[in-house]
Length: 218
Image (cartoon, rainbow, N blue to C red; front, top):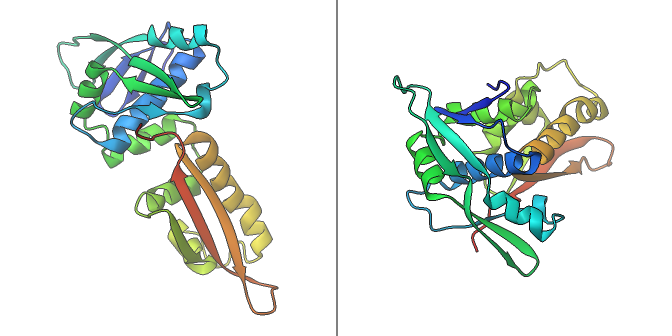
């Protein structure tokens, strides 16, 4: 959920009215890094190509990004002020960010890695296509590369057997939309290759390959 001044993520309420678009994007990526790592300490950095185009002055401005955070179940509505990141480093033309200690601690305490909060994150990120949401839930249980038949993929997505009998239609209206959602609205980079029947006329199975494009340790 989101209004003019706040966003909710898991059990957190984050006040964001003064953030620039770059700072706002940084906040989202830091929260996802905490969710994916699910660590109890803050001894790591994250990196992203998103900010590689920024000049040094704008990168320094990211260090100044400050938000106020509270919990949705906090009856006293106490707010905590915290920076988004505590350090920025440039190494081999890559930019690394260290989440601030307070933001990390509060986010971990909010149980931000729960399945429910992850779905909230996906919806907050603009993913509305139901098959993308189902696929991402399935993707979270996979490792790197996996193969699935077209028939089983449709079954997993909950698509009725009589729909999209033509693979090109299935690709256009389902697979390409899933790829677009995953690659533009999540931390994953996803690609797919097809395997055909012996005569090469019918697509039998799909090989999906994915990796986390923005969250790496130094």
